[in-house]
Image (cartoon, rainbow, N blue to C red; front, side, top):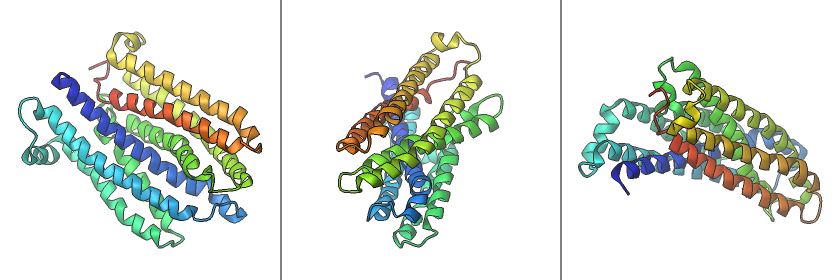
Length: 303
């Protein structure tokens, strides 16, 4: 594999790990606050779910720690690795003396600051999930700092705002679906009635989130693509079209789950069927995130 292609692959893989971690973390927070919020009062919550959700927060932060280190290595390799080995001195140089490194430091600091929240959440204090939500928001707000948004020549405010909302909405949709599949639809986690209640609350949340993902995606493309032919005449545009197609496919699978699978949830195999179809939706979503991770390291059409 040519050196430049290998460097881009490293960058994309590290970004994919980061995006999966952020989407998953947002999903845990949204599942706890938006899907289970009423469930605690209604008594429709599987036993031990709170403890497992806290464990998932810890796992997502661990993934983000690894991804943050991977992104620093990948960025250093793309800058120096084609000509010389990546050393600790070069890693420190990129982290401390480059514009990218300064922004990466903010992102890493947000992850580090979130770590003590897990220890607080383990204690089970009622306000711990508010801290988780604040820590999650801090990670999301810093996430666009090393992407296209801050380098946009027309000003960074709206691209940054759109990207933050885009990431939050993707997490509320796909991250919450992941937690639902892992926990809410586990064979031993809940009764069929519990699953019906969880899915009903998730469906309303997901509909709003999908709409927000689509709208912010279109507006972001409007900022970055100056002329329509750039969609098929540039590498960025062609990859963007692939991403759009994958988004459409993921949304259609979600619509199928909502309109066809969800109404049959009360059947004997209804929960298992939804778990399988939800897993398929998540599999396509991973490919979507992988394409997105590649896209953010390509030059925008006007560049």
